[in-house]
Length: 354
Image 1 (cartoon, helix red, strand yellow):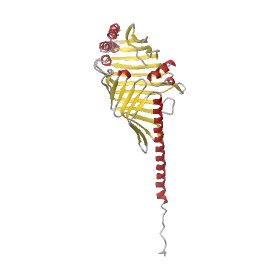
Image 2 (image 1 turned 45 degrees about the vertical axis):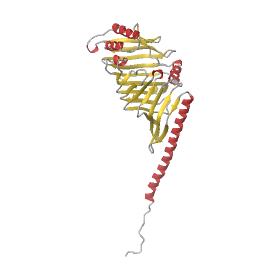
Image 3 (image 1 turned 135 degrees about the horizontal axis):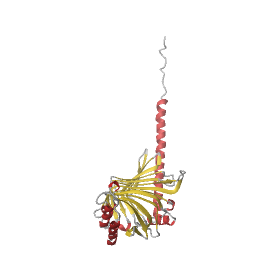
Image 4 (image 1 turned 90 degrees about the vertical axis):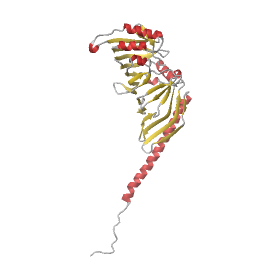
């Protein structure tokens, strides 16, 4: 016989409340961490801008905002204009930097609306692309890993500016990473790689002549020695200090395809003279080089003496054999005395680093 007055068993509701309480406390702690993180990011960014301005740079922007809660840290700056003491500059309607809030050592920086580059006295060139992005990770390393990508960029020289060699490209990439010695120990050197895919030159320009109105593909890699000496307020000061410290490009190798011509290049070492001009030898294994040299000679670029020298070099260049290795020849480009030589012929001024 049961007792009609027995109280029903009531289960504790703590089992329901505790999980929600844990989530609430965790969310509150995470939100606090997110605000601390974003404040630190803004403070470091403002400090970096102040140091640049003290070094002679000009940094302007219309405003800075931080969003992305709860899992991202997204920093946006509008109407950005950064000018180096040398007169080189970059301007963009918006620059956006984004990282995971739980791992803020890897950042992706983008210019979604394109940018304008100022090339010193050469003037401005507008860059529009499907994607302009730079990724940084390993910020706690001596040298971070850097990747810069421009997908389908279009280059337009603005009024009163000198022409830009490229009109557009399929892809432009630049990579940098710490150079690791045989013992897997990072050094003061860095590895760099540049890649250009389906580059097209401007009308009557040197790239169009070199490619015979085709496309230019290039990949060049090297090791930058004494990268720790790359210090200075602008590109000129940075590279001149590096050169004075004995900095060099070593283990240079690459491949260029210009129209029907293909070239494999290598150099044990390249450096700069006291005037910033490139010095050293580049060894080339060229396939069908004659068409590229003749096209370059006919391009409306440089003075008449340079075009005449290119034409003489084309006439003196051996055409090689036939078949699959047809017109494959070995050439040496020599950068010395501020000029670029192919054999005895001075083709053009040597590339200037600073």
